[in-house]
Image (cartoon, rainbow, N blue to C red):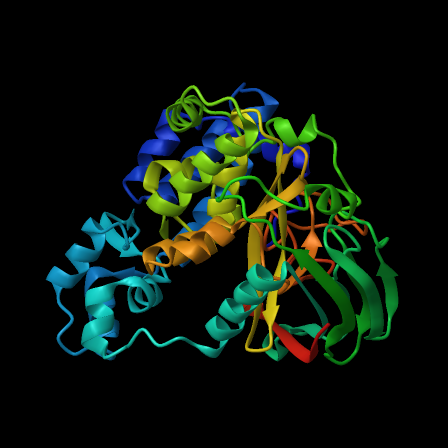
Length: 469
């Protein structure tokens, strides 16, 4: 990624519609023609917002074809390495079931890089033919046990120690590089306590304040030899269970007392946040249909959660930096991963007058550590409550209504929450467009000349210890 970083203000330009000529070239899959057309339009007397939008679109058309690498023939050939009888009919069925996203490239269909993973993980017929049973994984066992414990005891607390690292792949390293690397670390917010930085790599180090909304540790160094930047930390997460589905909720006063220290600016948690949290005509209409005449904030949030979990198909996505309005995409296409679904929930809640906000970082239990996004919404007298639409939607797909209901109001304590706001700035400025323009979950790295893409980096996440408290 060679493009200089776009400020939050400049990213608002993604809401500007492109000239029709550019859009027509892109729709036909002629990205070279689109690029030349953008260059011509940058010379025309259009406003600065349009010029900013056009410059960003040059980045999108450069990167988008990489996210959709395979033709129909290539998809079938690759899938037959796993499933010899995979056919064009299977691919067409996946399209009808909304599981095979594609774009045109030079007039031919090209499918998203995650297609085989999507079908292998989510398509029942393909899984049956592959002989994949619906066994409960070790990760699932920890999750389900935590939910049972919270429902039985009313709470659960854990102490987790993680080590994360980032390193430039050797083939991209040049001696003398001035490197800047950001790794996310837990903020002392929400239900997270007793955060300790135990060890980290050498170099010029900047550690964000404990209550930073986008908390990270930044390393700056000039390297003669390639090396790994790492941070090791521990933290405690304490979660209290609320059953929001059966009658009156007990213990509200106690829960309100220990709710997250950061209550937030309710004006910010109700407003648009361009380019993604945008109250488009379709999203306004959809929110009105979902909410109806309901006026109670808890019931409004519940109706929105029900809609997302029961109607949106989980799907691995293209890079978020290539999307111009994430919740609108989700609502129009009824597919999305954890972050896409969380943003749809947040946006619909805000449209309907319920404060809602973003939270993300790592999902970390002893069997699995990986990036994850979820949402929070505010309802009196309980304060800030969790909603995890993607895990709730997965439970719905598996017929587990208890687990689906759990994720409205609750999450298990397997969360390293580094980001408590959406699309913020690093305290140590990045000079180039980040891998993820929405938040920082895995890490970022750049040199003086450019930022590095995810496939140019080696990123690791390791659980060092886990203790139930």
